[in-house]
Image 1 (cartoon, one colour):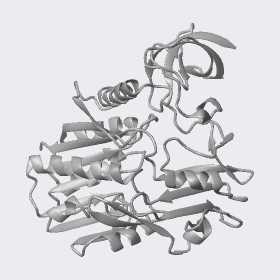
Image 2 (cartoon, one colour):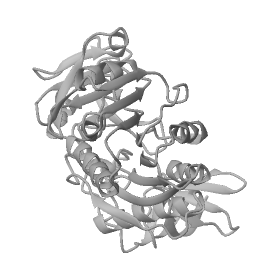
Image 3 (cartoon, rainbow, N blue to C red):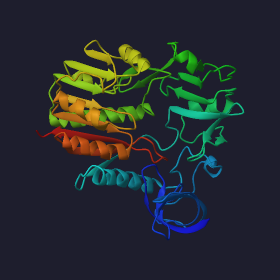
Image 4 (cartoon, helix red, strand yellow):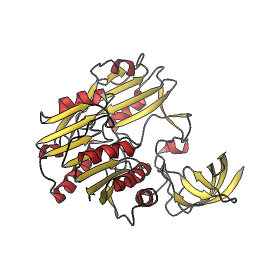
Length: 396
């Protein structure tokens, strides 16, 4: 069933937002604001619907031709390649502002923007599916695979693996490179049996990595070398990691937060503990991932106490500063409760989902914190993904 739809907004998740004749909201992937579209309705619910574009009757001013040939083939890896740079920036700022207002009840937030890495060839970690042994990305909101032999946003060290790699019967492959060291690692799921990759690329199966097989790369960022294991999280590029550290350093410096105690929640391999953490006499890093904790122990100095435990189970300690970089779901109520028990006057929150930020903002406000600053750090050009750094000051 086809419908004529005008797109008036962009939603968290990147889809365009329009209305059907019956008043229901319809979400359309690949749409731009002010697009006039002919849409096929593919999913119908009582309050909303989803559709796919049959024809762009009239293009919005932010629409451009995607630079990557795989977009036309259905690849869903970069959901905003059809938007100009200006439209992408405006869209991300509005997504964050709307989330803070509607979900967080923050009145007229002043959302800043910080340009991220280059708009192409920036990602140093990608996850792909496998079809007939070759790398493939999934279509938007679909398990269907689109084989690829290159990727516009992947670092060139990854591109060679995409084009030459054979991944046998794996269901998924994670490719990670050190852009400044040349290290390269491929992890196959569930195994890496039968893989063929270029020379000097380390190969490990997820079954092996889960048994503490020492598979890792080394990356350089913020003046340090970081050990990053196959199962550990790191930022999408070393440049992005450095920008996060710079924003944290700037905000903490402005507020003269002292030098006694910092708590680093969801610490990962130790990015914040190993950089701005050097300002403090004592740093407590809390992380639940075994591989990330092992990496952090290698990466960090002895003044950092590393706790392998979930944030929700950790017994809070008093702190001058808390830095929290939670997963996409955000802090949620328990995470905010833990922060409150540290009695930290200053909290820096890194959010990778606008909706989670909005919900966490409401919780932080209820816990006695006031939003002091918020910036969108554009670490994921060509996509709707956001990285938001917000600073909070305790007012009770």
